[in-house]
Amino acid sequence: MSVAQNPLSIKVKLPREDAVLLTVEGDLDMDTATELQHHLANQLHHGRRHFLLDIAGVPFMDSSGMNIVLRAYQEVREIPGGVYVISPTPAVRRILDLTGVSITVPIVESVEEALAVADSRPTEPGTSASTDE
Image (cartoon, rainbow, N blue to C red; front, side):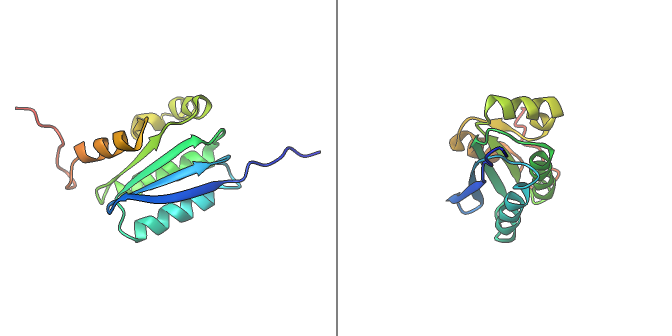
């Protein structure tokens, strides 16, 4: 008997013109990661710079899912833009921490926090968001 699969569901919303919120539910693994990659590529093609990934509904993520997140991060940082992971489950957060993904990709608790972090980042490549005086 096989284990019931947890199919991936991705809902797309635009909280503002330059940002897309992708609400992901289900296992993000080798069988489903390409679906997320397709959505990210499509939104990048449509000019989005900030990718908010709400993964509160993702109980499991393997290296395929992490690679998609990192690849998106690498592609948008030159725009400049960003990838923000929202509300990972404890199991997924542990994987993000253990692999170092959470050092590179900001982990936040809400869409509002993700947008605030995005707005605090540099708007031009090579500039600093620091306001030290």
